[in-house]
Length: 213
Image (cartoon, rainbow, N blue to C red; front, side, top):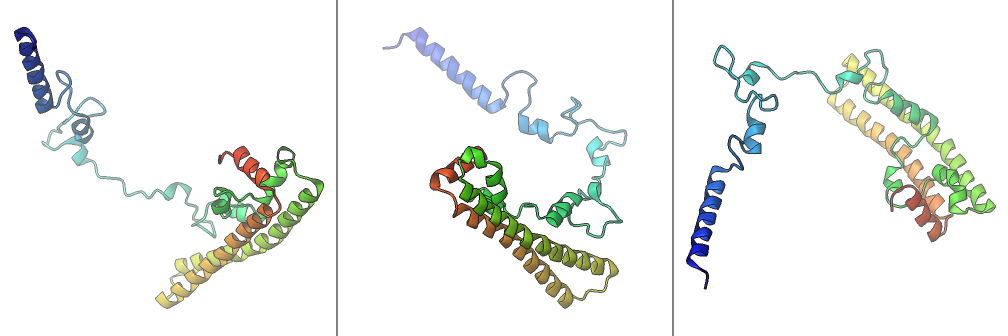
């Protein structure tokens, strides 16, 4: 049986725990993290600072209406919904993110396979076959990319001019989507064709070297 002293100490320990839970504090003057986060001026050590008119300082400062898109906004750009980097990549046939669904799901792309030919142990025949896939892809995605960019540019120009009806807008947006879909499909087809030229071991090595395994 526990001694009387042990039982008394256990009672005091329990009471201390109850006080801790009720007050919600781990030390004198330390407010809960959520309260600190919600108190104006908490990060600067001036929680609950009040201006001369009796209003909290945060309440007197209106949120900025500035758009997050404003930093990269170029009023002279023909296409404003794509970054200059995205446009440049599409123009030269770079992946521009369109091959990402294949790349991150274990389906190698021709360009990176050629870059890793030595590490993957590609034969001369494999290198020639993958190069042919890369060349065919480039011949397809460059004109497809330009068609897509032309459609986006025309759509944005008409939006600025205010000449689109709701019906026209729907048709145009669907067409832009179709053209972008063709561009994406061309990139993804090249990945499928490349994967078919590799052994399972080479595909596994590719994904490991690319950091996906």
